[in-house]
Image (cartoon, helix red, strand yellow):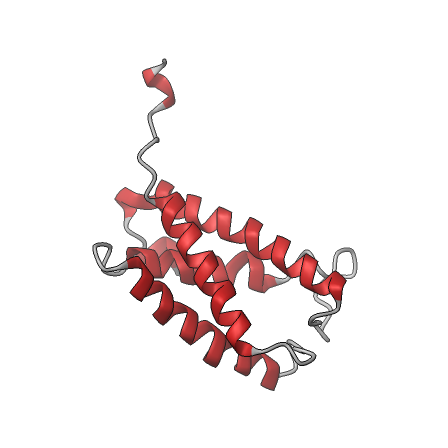
Length: 138
């Protein structure tokens, strides 16, 4: 879906935001899983049950990339807060309801701040002005 509806002139910038989202969400998740803060009752891949969660490689980065390109001149804190509220209070509760995610007492408000952090970092990376074509040289 993202390939169909993305802003083609901003593909590189959006991908940068998506890739940083993948890296950070995997790091946060691995730290939380190893600390026992939450768990995933489902196993998606026997060779890497924690690293191959479809959630990290598709849902979160694509949602952030879509959100980044909607109203690009809007206040990023407001956009991030709306995205985070939807992700934390609706998305995570849905995943808990279908037994995809076991929060083990983890508060949804913490998820809100994690999503806000992910969005703002992705926003910052996708709006960097330091990009220059490699063929332009030094």
